[in-house]
Image 1: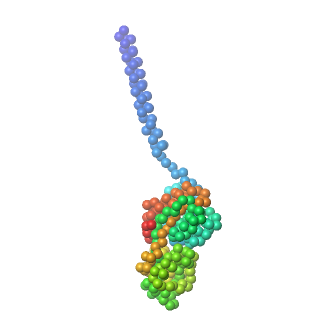
Image 2 (image 1 turned 30 degrees about the vertical axis):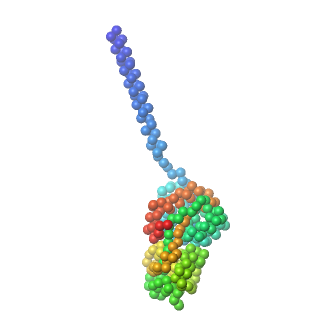
Length: 268
C-alpha cells in the first residue's frame, strides 16, 4: 500500500509540475509578441514633386536630401521659380504635389481656384535686403540711395513676391525707384548683381546670406514694412497625397525649422 501511495504522489507531483510549466509558458507568450507589434517600418514610397519659390532653393534642396535619407524608397523632385510663375503652371495642370510660396497672395490664388487639398500651413518669414557687389561701387548705404541718378538697381517684377514687397516698401518710404530691369525671380535679381550688371538689387536677406562673399548686404529699416510669410500646401491634383503630407510635415518639423533658421528665415 505504501508503494502504491508513493506512485500516486509521484504522478500527482509530475502533473502539477507540468501544469505549472504550461501556465508559465502561456504567461510569457504575450511579451514575445510585443517587439513585432511595436516595430515600425516606413510605408512611404514613390516620388513627390515640389514646386517652390526660388528663394527656397538652398533650403529645400537640403530638406529634400534629408527626407529621402530618412525615407528610403522615396524621391523628391524639385522645381524652383517665381511664385507667380509656379501658380500659373499649377493652374494649367502642371503635375505638382506640393506648392511652397514666398507669399500668401499667390497661395490664396490656388485656394480660391480650389486647387489645394486642405488649408496651407505657414512655415517661414523673410524680408528684403539690398545686395551690392563686394566693392559697393555706387556707395549704397540706404534704401533712398537706390533712387539716386545713375544707380543701376534691379528689382523683381511686381507680380513676384519680392517685387510686391518692393512696391510696399517704396510706398511706405515715399520713394520711387527706376530699376534698369525687373526680373521674374529673386535669384535672377541676385544674378544681375553678382555678374556686375547692376549696382544693387533688392533680394531677401536669405539670398544675401546664401551668396556668401559674392555680394554684400545692406539692411534698411523700411524692410520691416514688407515681411513675407511663406505658406506650403498639398495640391489637390496630387497623385501621392500621403507622401506630400509627409514632406510638408518634414518642412514644418523642428529639424526643418532649424534648416530654415540656419539659412536666415524667420519663424512664421
